[in-house]
Amino acid sequence: MKKIMTLTAGAALLLLPSCIQEFEPQQVIVTEDQASSAPGAYENFVNSLTSSVAGQWVFDTPDYRKPNDFGYPSLILMREMTGNDMVAVGGGYNWFHMWYTSDVTLAPIYLNCQYPWTYYYSQIKNCNTVLNLAGENPSDIHKAGAGMAHAWRAFYYLDLAQMFCPVSYAQDKTAPTVPIVSNDMSISGASNNPRATYEDMMKFILADLDNAERFLSDYSRRSKEEPDMSVVNGLRARVYLLMEDWVNAEKYAKEAQKGYTVMTGAEYNNKVNGFNNANSNNAWLWCCTFKKDDACMVTGGNHSWGSWMINELPNDGQTGYGYYSKYGAGNYIDYHLYQTIPASDTRKQCYVDFEIDKKTTATDVIKALAAYSDVPEYVFNSGNAVRSNTNGANAWGGMPLKFRGRDGNHTNNQEAYCVDVPLMRVEEMVLIEAEAAGRQDENRGKALLETFAKTRDENYVYGKHNDAYNNSSTSPFINEIWWQRRVEFWGEGLAMFDIKRLNKGIIRSYAGTNHVDGYRWNTNEPPQWMTFCIVQTETNNNSACTNNPTPIAPKGNSPEHAW
Image (tube, rainbow, N blue to C red; front, side, top):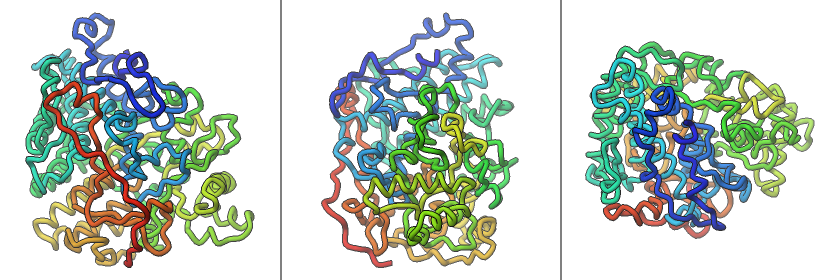
């Protein structure tokens, strides 16, 4: 059942060196008769809504294509790479480098372009199957599954709208997003299905969330992998924030916070449970989870989230090695963003101080790294692998220690990489409430912001991050909110959405930058490559679907920005 639901495409997709063959994820149909005839079919399909989110291959391709194919967390990293807060090093070994470099393989004819489209629409098809099995008025035993399907579908379409629309909702609510494929759409309908306007897409998503509430209002979920009413309200808060409906954004952000508490500084920097266990604190509303029997984990987890984001493991190759620790394909925090974090802010401890790179002996470096990790020698080896892979351009400075191995595991990669990855935290709801309140009454928003900021930095002083960063598209208050979101949610997949929503640019070129030479680009507005292309198979087979321009990478570094 899991294989059916995840739409493994090995039989349909034959890889050429870089290009793809025809494959239409919207038109791979599991009929109701086929589904309902299997024992325990409905429950299996409902369970697969969560089990297929992370850890499964989207394409059953050769091993050399699997390093960035591990489900939704792959999409998180693809989005993070498009901006300036995450620095992707490692060249050919970094399989997310294409999104960092605006590579030609993001064009509609390539697999890199197909991956997001196939993942999202495969998951949407899963939701549609559950909704068809449940019926328009599901029985009591079908209600929870239907509610989760509506919530997941809303989540996926909200991502798609922001990834594929060239502008923000506030700029043009008539702009095209993506085609809506509902559970009652025929194959012929999908072949003549135009991209929904931003306004129509938001109406569809809100209707899904209304139905999710209708069916989940009394549901007590089995784990934080499943959506419940707190998640439904959190998704509403995200939608209304995007729509600039400040009253409703504030209302639902407050609703979503009920029963949750902001992580303490100690929890944020916990060396055992640091961003790997949704139940180790009361802040996570929603997560996805890698399990030991997942497709991407059975070979040691080398092709998983942990391989790219956890660097406290050995690189001996005996228990899986990790692209970070073995091949030196590292992801770092932007140097300037790091420098803007005060020393008194607990989140700064998540990243290795750049001053460590000035030390001249391995002994001194390892001694300094002990402040960040219980296994500083492993962190040293990871940084050393990166340094070797980049001719000394990067080493330990800026290396993240935010994401740790499961239960503090430092010996077995496969077990350590079985982590929870956050999809929604209460801190996001707190900051949405603060922004929405401040858009109505800045003093009220400022008070909420300061209350949150002091949970991270007891010496927080409002206004220190008010340099407008790179344009004046937002007020000093919103710049403060944005800075908090950038630091708080680094690596969690929200950065690109904020840049597009706030009409910000990116800055990679400046004195002291740690961005990769040749890709040090500055823009005054969201760069073109933040608008993903629609895979060519969709436009070939859907006559009403238009496409976005293929992104064109700038030539050479931009002149250095002066802060």
